Amino acid sequence: MRGESIDMDLSNIRCEYLNGAYNDFANLLGIDAVLKIHSAYRGQQITFPVELFSKEFIALQIVNEYDGYNVKQLATKFGYSEKWIRKILKDHIDKEESK
Image (cartoon, rainbow, N blue to C red; front, side, top):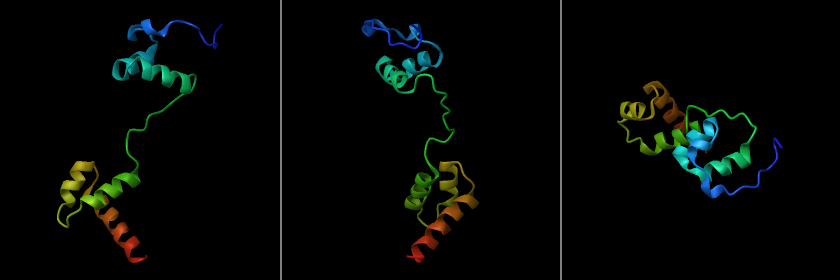
């Protein structure tokens, strides 16, 4: 029976009935979301990156929010060094000039 689909009424499922991380997810997202996650990923090992957004997206945000004077504020906001912020801005300028 293990690994097979269980035919049961899922309307009475409560978070505390769920195993491990499924219980945590159910408390955060709700039972319906957890059932979808289980269906799509059951049995797989999943690692969640520390950073939610890609570096490309963060770089785009930095470029869009840069006003010519706010490198320090951008570094604080995005959690990067001022040197890294300046590099992102320089790379963007170089890319624009090469077009």
